[in-house]
Length: 215
Image (cartoon, one colour):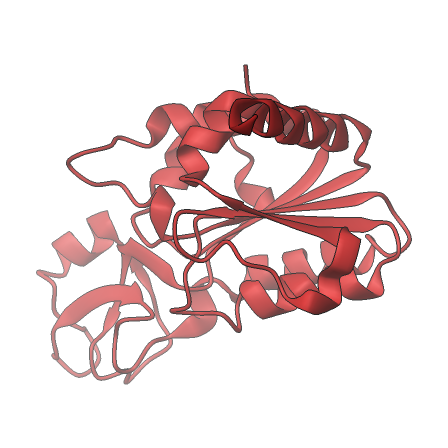
């Protein structure tokens, strides 16, 4: 019976992907590259699934892997930053340097001579200018989803930054009569009661789930 239910869920999500006019994808910690699992093939699979759709992706990961895939960089927002971008650890300037430029500078800020550090939300003086242009593109895209068949796929996100993805995604679906939220994850797959039949929580590793849906 359990396998039958799982198959029905996979079929339902495939159908929703097929019918969706717009797809919003949220990628959490389960998509972080580590020694046990290389995520490149999953990004490629995600691209295969949504490339013909009007999509946008919000990622909480800072490893920059998503930018090395076939996914359109103009449709990606990384509000937590990128370890391949660098900033002054003291935050003396809003300047941000790419990895090669930081190397030329010997990892030293040319303005105050403090150390350069990865431009991520983990930095005490996080410079947000790096992701803001794409965040603006995301909010503009989101404004065009009202009254559209919108599928929100939130995959593998925890509670480290719920105000970036988890809560806004639920709000978006709640106010859009044609939207549906699919939240997949090993730990934090639950959806709020307010979602009712407009949301579905799936207790499974999001990478494994995507592999099944992409068959």
